[in-house]
Length: 71
Image 1: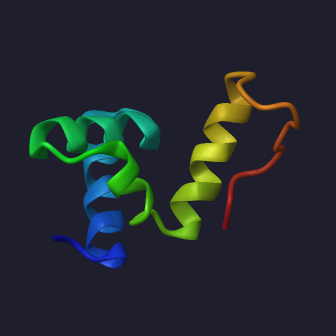
Image 2: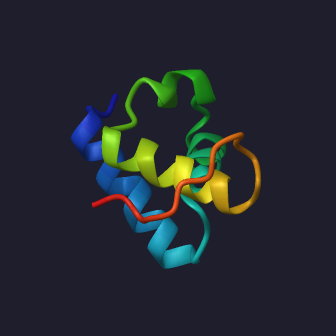
């Protein structure tokens, strides 16, 4: 089982390598490793949560708009 730091690094790598969103990278990782998305949700760090919120905002999937990328 991965810890939060290792999982987050892996998700960032997948997102960059496959040129996909962080949410898609998490789903892809879960499918490839037979992990429930709910389990993965517990491993997501705050930076990735903020990035997912930003991506969702850009796709009009959130009520509030987020205007800048997380730091």
